[in-house]
Length: 286
Ligand SMILES: [Zn+2]
Image (cartoon, rainbow, N blue to C red; front, side, top):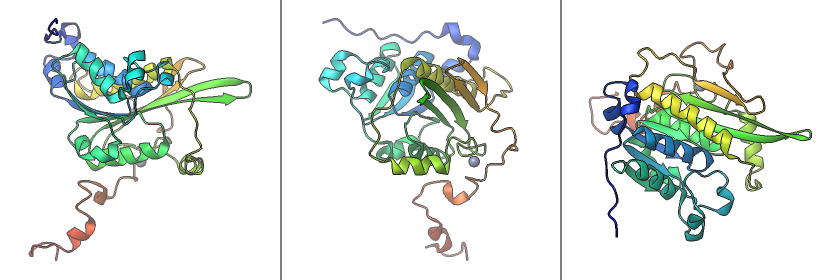
């Protein structure tokens, strides 16, 4: 049997990202939550970029209805019941055999401590409620959170495609500020709970939104731009084939997010506020 080729990933052609960008990327740990249509593209791109450490979270196995959009998945994966997280790891390691991957084939809530150690969290989840929980967890650990969402909906006789990529930084505008999480959508989702069928999904908008998300990541991580100033919410109009910075944040003053202003939402949830009010050791908090 032939031995697998193990060779350092050659990043010469992206050296413009900065003198130390290769080692910075190699030393970066990301979590990708949701490795379906969007997350599989992100995993592939971050593998090529030379990101060193991946926490890959998705409880689902590959099904034949996924093959229209799941990057790296094969018919054999459907047959063998491979998990989407495993497929993502295989794609990454196929490009960069020195990457370190942790496969978490479970819901992210059961491996939240693994997320805590990550430098950036990508959320590629379907529901608004899931987004809300994931962003809250990211804020708790002061971790940048990058979210993508795509929607295909029927409008009169035709279908419309839309979506967005959002960067939620601690202290900056959150998904609620951006209008991605709102009470009406949460309520509608709760009403329809369990009734949702397979939602329409197709590959190219997912690829485009994943690329925008990876663009946010590169802006954050590498010294490519000295003083990066970039919009944190990009909107994709799939009908017009355009991407534009959203004007939803135009009236929000910098740092005006009040949704995460409560400091008890930061840090390990084990340290509930009652622990602070009634310290076991004397001498503090009296
Ligand atoms: Zn906010």
